Length: 487
Image (cartoon, rainbow, N blue to C red; front, side, top):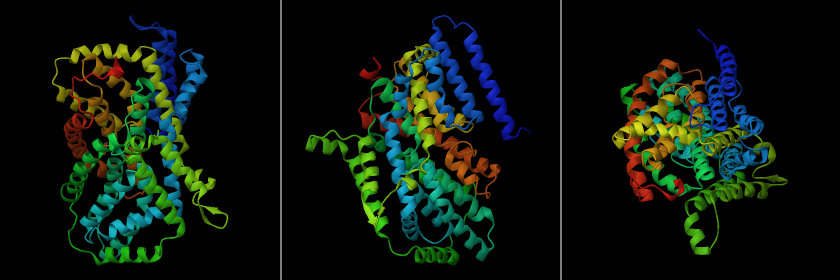
């Protein structure tokens, strides 16, 4: 059986080999050399992403190196993608999340919600899911999973010790519930996961079309509200059998943790105030711009919130956030998002996306809902073997051109596909939350397959149908409403 190192080495060599073929061979008819080389670079990045031939974030640097060499873009033009406003939006969100974690605010929020959830194992799982999804809407799904994991492990340890419970009675469904709710919660807001930022960046940079924070929320939040109870039901009643009886052990755990955390510190209060101010400005940005004739945007609000944390003192020579805390953010994600935006830009400017889209006429007589379901299903199962961000970076431009080729509005394809990329539940490598939970050592791949396959199927139909209806409602368009930005 191949180990991770062997797969990585194979991917490294195979990616270079494939890219070399694109350099030395002539492009097919109707495709120029620039587009052909761009396709080779896209395949190289995809292979390296899938096999983790090099660190996944480092793969995002490839456009900076190869695009200038092959005269696809000069360095100045392509480097703009790495400072895209949506990359900076993510930067601000990461800094706010780091400050929350540093002062312990995330644990207080979690415990307060858990205290209201009930004290039976099934209700505790529901409480963790609600908590994780709520945090993941505003903090990256990876960070929210990492925040919740130690709390969950503490609950599991005490519960198992006092009741001699098996892992299937709480540990496995609870940990899976955290990962799944983090993924679905992150998909419900524009800043909750890199995939959403990736799509917004592609639409903004390539087509000059902006999806606002509130637009995405109006689509993602109803899907979250719909999917979360379904996931809870299947984890606690179908995939595993979880008790509904109240547990004194769980009550003791929450009581002890509440005593240990004490009263909110001044630093927590400051970070909470900045967090809610930032969320308030994101949600009411359009209204504030109209009333006060401002030009607020989601990126400036995010960076303003982060800057406030560096400015507000919480003690003598202490600020709400310092550089030691901010430096812990996942900088690599910013490179990955920038690389994806750069690749998408080259796909379109070179004519490669148009050429791929020209094959879409083969599907022109298919029913619209069948095409949506096929696209969403493809993305979910591809994401099981690939980074969800890499999947969207590769396929979002293709789906846009595909939709245009059959005279369909691309939003009906790329938005559900992007949400679906956060709903791959079967394997550890599918999403960062899955990987974090798998790293606890308490879950086997067979456990994830057991719970995840059926949830994948349910998600395909739920996301396809719900998002189609919501997109019509939010944007006031139908499938044949071709927007100005694609003409």
